[in-house]
Length: 314
Image 1 (cartoon, rainbow, N blue to C red):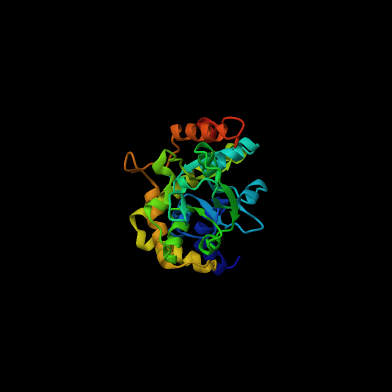
Image 2 (cartoon, rainbow, N blue to C red; image 1 turned 90 degrees about the horizontal axis):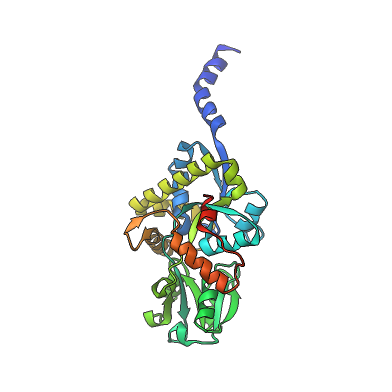
């Protein structure tokens, strides 16, 4: 080895050594790039993953390869899921572990197009995403005797705008703002917010398979801690976070706009806060898991209880 090569190796050795110690992990959020996942983009952009000795690759799902398919086929090691969706998968025979809970509140709503409360629309044609996320709405509609006709929709609001639907499911951080931007007459009377009616079921959390967790508990903890740092930074620096989100959106050619992403980020950050304590807690609440269990068991969405201890691998 000549002198120049030796000096170059000495210079690069610390970086090469650090790279060799990095643990690789593929993380797939459950939907396309948007402010809903801002904390993870921040953790990547600000180097929080690297500081945790993690080489994290964020791979978004596609129509042919959704997040759950990637998890099942071990193409991704971590994903985000709503609580009731994760419980349904556990009951189906795919044991999952919640390593970080971000959502402390429910964001689901039903928006009516007929100028009345959704509770007054028995038998209404209601849009529900074909990709899922409708478990709570099914349970509520049965309990309230609404006899809705559920119409599968894609990720847009076109059917609702055209008048083909009487009402549609919406997230307070996404579709609701899209509907407001259309100029349709939406009032508090025509919006049913689940969290205001005793259905404040937590939503997004980060999940890994139980097998992966048992094999890599330290890696999972480092990943969860880095994600939490990302969300904390996002809450403290919303303007810079929005810039990071918009960069990710543009790189992935997602059709959206800055105003929508700003509103989404603000609402998602509100969802981090437990309304009862005013704190960002990053934890599953045992009483919420028990309530979700009861709702799903009563309506045959699961057939065996999925316990709080099971979800946290205690």
